[in-house]
Image (cartoon, helix red, strand yellow):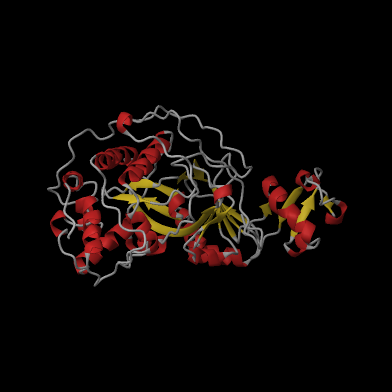
Length: 471
C-alpha cells in the first residue's frame, strides 16, 4: 500500500512552500535567489519563538564523529553563512520548523535503507514526502514511487544544504540528516539564534567568518563570499571558541610560543617517553630572565616545565606552518598554516586544540593584504622563501567572527544545517581544561530572543595533533 499524505504533513508542507523566501523556491532554483513574485510568511521577522509550545531541551548525549564535505559545497557558493540579517532570518526559520514539529513532523525513513537513482518502492515515496516537507521537492511530486532524475536533483539540493557530497545517494550522513526530526531542527535553529543574540559583531565591507561546525573560512566583501577555504577546527575536548575580533597582522615564518595547556597535556607526556623530543621538534626552553635552559635540567615527571617559556623555531616543521593570521583575542587563538596538510582532505576535520588551520592560507593572506601595495601572492611566497620573520599589517583591520551555527539562513533565504559537533544545542561543552565553560555576558540586549539559560561559550588553547605539535 502506498504512503498517503497525512493532513499534518500536508499542512507542514504547505507552510514551508508558502515561504519560498526561506525554503522552497530557493531550493527549487538550484540554491539561487527566490523569484520576484515570492510571497512572504504571515508574521513579523524576528518575533520571539513561542517557548510555551517548545519541547523540553533533550539531555546531552554523545555526539557521533561528524563529517563535512564543504569542499564540494563551496565550489561556486558565494553566500555567507553569517550576515547582518542572520538573527532575524534564523529566528523566523525556527518558527516555521516549530510549526512543522507541532503539526506532526515529517516521515522518518528506516535506519537501514539505501536509496539511489533507479530505486523503487514505498521508501522512495517516503523520501519524496520527506523532501517535500522542507521544500527541496515540489508537493506535486510526491506520488511517483521511482527514484527519477527529478528526485535525484532534490536529494542533491538537500545534501547541499547540509554540507554533504552532492551524489544523490541516500545513505550515511545524508540518511542521518533525513532521519533527523523536525523538532530537533527547530532546536538547532533556536539555539543558534540564542547564541547569536549574545554577539556584538561589527560587520564591515570586508569581513571573515569561520562557522565552526562547517569547518570552513569565508572571506566576504560587499555581502559576497569572494574566497572560501577548507579548515581544521577544534576537537570536542579542545573546542574552538566563538569570538569577534579583527585581523591586525600577517606573520610570515612565525615562531610559536607553546601555551601552558599544551605543555601540560602534550609536551610533558612526550618528553617522558622521549627525552630528545624537544630537540627533534626544534623547541627551545627559556627561563624567566630569558636565559636558555637545558631540557635535562628539568624534572619531566612533574609539571615544573609549565613555569618555563617553550618556543619553537620558525620553519616548515613549525606548528603554525609558515604563516599566521594574527587576531588579538582573550582566548589566544588564531588562524594559521600547518605542516599537517593531509587533514584538509578528511571528512572529519575537528582535530585542533582551538586554533583554525586554513588550507591555501597564503591565498587567504593575499586577500587580507589586498589593500597593501606590493603584497600579492607572489610577494608573500618570495618573503616566506627567505626564511626570515616578517610581519605585515593590513591597511585596514578586518573584522573576523568565529561562529557556532548548527542552523543558519543564507541571504537568499535558504536554510542550512550542520552537525552539533560540540553538543552545544543539547548541553554544555567542556573547555580544554575539562571544566564547563563560564557563561559569557551579553554585550547588548538580545534582539528578539530570551537569552536566559544560554549555554556558555567555549574557551580554547592552541592545537596539537597526535604525532606532532600543531596548534
